[in-house]
Amino acid sequence: MHKSYKSRVHVFMATLLFVLLLAVSAQAASFTAPKKLADYLYYVEFADYNFDLTTGENVKTGFACSAVRNGNFYGRNLDLDYSDVPEFVIKVAAKEGRYASIGMAAVLTLKSNEVDKLSEAEMLALPNMTFDGINENGVAMNSNVAPAVDMDFATLLSTNYGKPRIHSLAVVRYVLDHAKSAAHGVELLKNMDIYGGYGTWGLHWMISDSKETYIIECIDGELIARNDTDNIMTNFYVNYAPKTPYAKHVAQTGQTVAGKVYEGFPILTPHACGVERYAILKEHYEEGGKSAEGMAHLMERVKYTQSYEADTKPFWYTEFTEGSMTIAHTPADFKSVIQSQIDTYKMHDRNIQPNNFWQTWHTSVYDLANKTLRLNIQEDYSKHYDFKLD
Image (tube, rainbow, N blue to C red; front, side):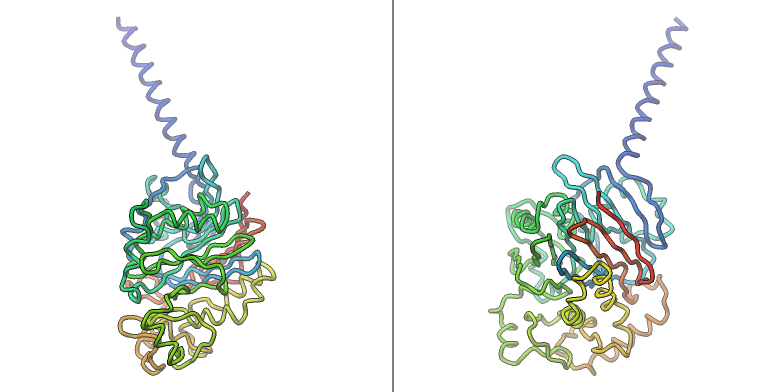
């Protein structure tokens, strides 16, 4: 009887150990340990992750950003406040119903010394916060903010009532997982009900493959996608409805932005941001189509800290349209708010919250033909990191 009892105990313990080993093995198989590549940069591979359609509901922040596509090269700057938050290059493996992809993600509440403290649940949720990426079909996509206040915040509510709801932050991940082409990505989103944004800002997206580029926006409760733009996206609506009172006013008076007239631009809403960056990308557009290095240099032209340099020409007034300040104000009206930002910039303190200055967290250049990522981090253009989606 005693031997039998001991035998049963041994069998139970062996079974329990086996189950525990399976659990540990399953966790290990889901993602690799974050590998530090540089300050504020880590690399993680995911065999699987927990997709969440509601990603972003608790994220209350905003960012600027620039994106441009020329030929096989797709460039993107992520502009956010200067803070102690690391980013992750994430490679997500293919599985049934999901394409492989590589891109950039972050946990915006994370500190750089806390990466090793991330829970399994937090790690498995990380791919949901994908800011930009490319999948195995050569489909690249990113998200930028746009001023929802100029749309009476209606763009944050719904685009397709009755369809499956997806938060705007999850859109890039959803498309990378499922899109066969840029056009297919658009069709996927037309069958979803997109809602939410970053705080009071809405989102819009640029999506490309080797054949075409679309800019996708939520306008008056409807998803609109155009493939006849300049292939440039900063932080104003490209698809702004031309029959609105504001558009009619612009048509009559001309489009003046902080004392400068921009010809050949899309209609600009009052809180349009990134107008000067858009103009720079348009002026130097050709250099971005020559090589990955050329595209990286083009994106360096619009790195965000130039908005605090007095000798930047033209000065980037539209980065400071906030509250009652709009692009229609004269340059003199921006004086106090700009000086405040410049003073903060000079301190270079990552822990001033929530009114820190902004910088370019990363510059991604995706090669649509070769499915590669060329990455610069934290406005350091003296070196870059290369990744390939095999």
